[in-house]
Image 1: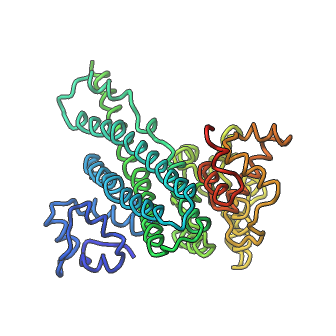
Image 2: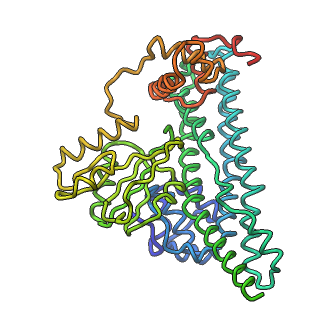
Image 3: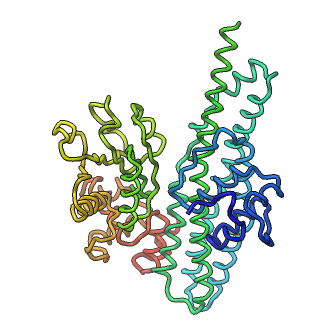
Length: 249
Length: 200
């Protein structure tokens, strides 16, 4: 079922409570009363179409966003993507890490096994952080300056030329290994870690990993299906403008 | 190959697309899917963008394409499935790796799709056992100790290609994809000792 602007926000949560962290990223807090999705978005000065595309891609992984792409600002999208990064690095990863360290403090595990699990998680954390940093330090700044230069009618030919040397496709990178590590961690815990007495905590860890995995998949999906097409459109507009300038000159 | 199943579906009929999606879901494989419902002549562009594992095409939407894009140098060559009805020419049929007869009955459709899933190594209905063979175990140990595929091939007097096939099977059986994950597995199961990997 697709989420639409006339639904009550409370209904949306009943439909899929996994959307709660997504609402947090939009600074939407609970206590919706009977207000509709549209009203809540208006209250928070959010672009309703943008909000709907984001929640629908998360709610249904086969949903393909196309309708309103042109009307979104890339900066809007990047703001959202940065908030998801912060959610991973500041909240989810430390939370999982802390629980893993608590598990490894258990006496029932051999010392070498404790270290193994911790090291594996640390290397995952390291890879994810490196990947995110690269996006934040290289990809996003490029997209933002491209948008700024295009939005400014007074941008000089030099500025246009300089930015046209880059392309979003060059930044496209395989998330493969980072994804695979998280997948492995799941199976190591589910299948191969010797039984721990603290089953409860292991369940919490697994639950968190599944949620994180789903969120990361959606993040990648949004980058591939919304961000990249928007930037490609901007790059097209940039080439047009450069062509026009050179034919006028 | 080890990534999630990514499918490009090129078919004009909404009903057929929805039907195929339902079928794929019933097969129990998680997948990502992108749909195209209009004729196209830039299939390569979509392939480069998505790296799909599977492309399902109604030949009507690629009228100008005599052969389908395949790159012998590349690691990700998609499997092409022709979405055909009765009466499609043999020449058209021969472009594809597999054919899905849209006029076929439920049994035939599922059988074809299961065959394709098996080719992709993602089938959930496989019945082979999940314990490692002797050979796989010795390869697992060498991988866990940090050897490359080439080093393993030299050591065991087999081709690199064979090593890769064994590795694929190991990953499928254990559900572990990365080298560091395999190392953790090997130590937890006492196939290798922690000390052996120190320094490597």
